[in-house]
Length: 125
Image (cartoon, rainbow, N blue to C red; front, side, top):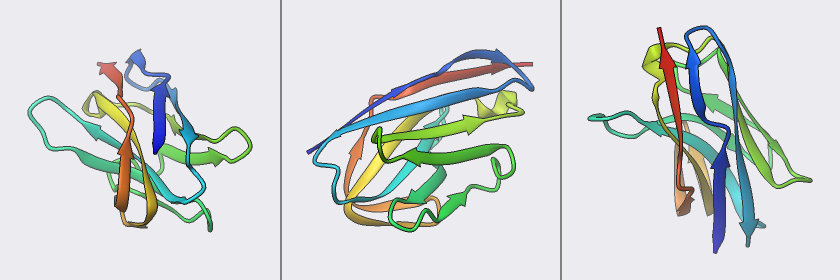
């Protein structure tokens, strides 16, 4: 089992920044792919960014490339999403996910997936 707890969401103005954190605990030794996903009201969940925890390879959705940065602090077992130049269309519930004994493929993760409870990001114009 893997437990994921997100934090760092909030309400900001367009152009501002936020950093999301995802603290992982439990059996994380085989979580070789982690990622951030988001879901806006009335829309399907979409992948934002993924990271191979072994190789540090990162993938970003086109909509966030150049503005968002995914990173992982292995010592703290924490995943981050640094978001800059936020836009109103970034408004969504953001979720952290880990694929235990799985893999990343683009902005998707596959395997024995675990999800956090989400943190809300609201960007006003």
